[in-house]
Image 1 (cartoon, rainbow, N blue to C red):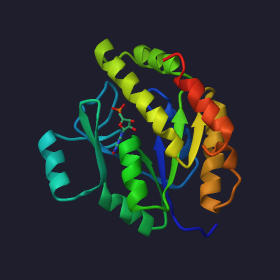
Image 2: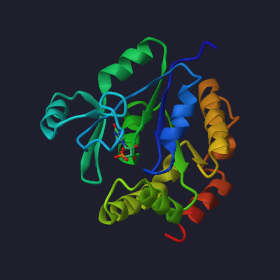
Image 3: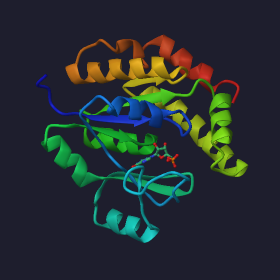
Length: 212
Ligand code: 5GP
């Protein structure tokens, strides 16, 4: 298929299982997955250069000063950023680029690259998101509550995304993710049921925000 390479922005509050969705997706697609830089410490099992580039605050600030990030943002006491050059290089090489970033960064990319497609993955509920974060057990209760609050804010902003899907059942989420990806590639309306202009999507977002 000869279509222009695209930037696909994927946002989801931590604990939404987007890592799993993206991992499944990249098993059978030729897409460049952008590895972000962060000042956060690695979690157990995370690999430098694969999950993130784990940088010092000094390295991060230097790259901000040199304008080396396509976008960057603070989230939950840490800094996160997408290096510009690898994104541009891969687009030039004809590959689609997936950015897994939070909402502030997503809006920065949309402003600079209006042709980018944005997708928000909802957790089934705030209560379920909290449960997943506690189950993961990588953070103190205080930090988890901070992330839950940040997630609620992000979910409210999901109405500004091109597409919104829910990760309740992984298989369904993966199917919906592919539908959105194909529609974005083909530039057709085959994923319009996932647009927030559809009242069903707005209802779904409001339901998730209930019982916080
Ligand atoms: P976590 O610390 O759970 O890995 O990520 C926290 C949040 O930062 C998630 O919403 C994740 O998508 C987001 N994030 C990861 N990399 C980047 C990035 O390069 N830029 C921005 N703006 N957000 C990022």
